[in-house]
Amino acid sequence: MAKSFTAKQNKTQGSLFRFPRSVEKQAIIRQGSCCAICNTGGNIKSLTGHHVIPVRHGCPSKNDPNYAFLNTVENCVMICKSCHISKAHGGHWAYGVLAGPEGFPNSHGSNTAAHKKWVSVLKSKEKKVCLFWKMSRKKK
Image 1 (cartoon, one colour):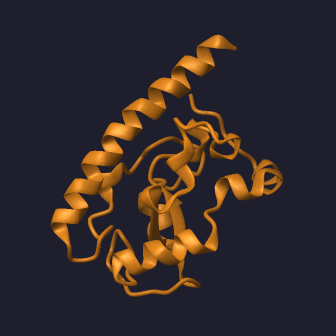
Image 2 (cartoon, one colour):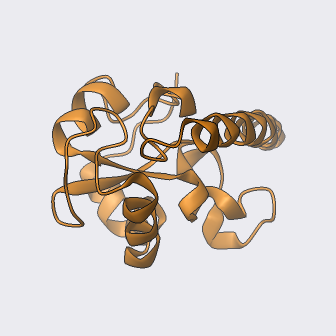
């Protein structure tokens, strides 16, 4: 089972679990200021940055090239708080990829071609990241 992070651990690891504000702003622009799941309009205060591929599968803070994209706009979708809890995490904060890239149909606003390309790219990266993550866990 996936490792669960407590609220205290989340606070101590802080920036590892949050996108820089500049990344969130870029994602909002890409999405046309709407939730990537339900398409409800929003802004930087009403939408939450969500890692499509969970950051716990890598360590972007160590600048490992295998994981460097985890805290970039490529892996960020902005979603409303309701969707963040109920759909992106299935009501659970501790579990892995519950909503893969295809679960964010409005990741590029109404540009479906860009969304399909993004899904393909992230699925490829997800396989690599999960493989590196599994291999690193075996070494311990």
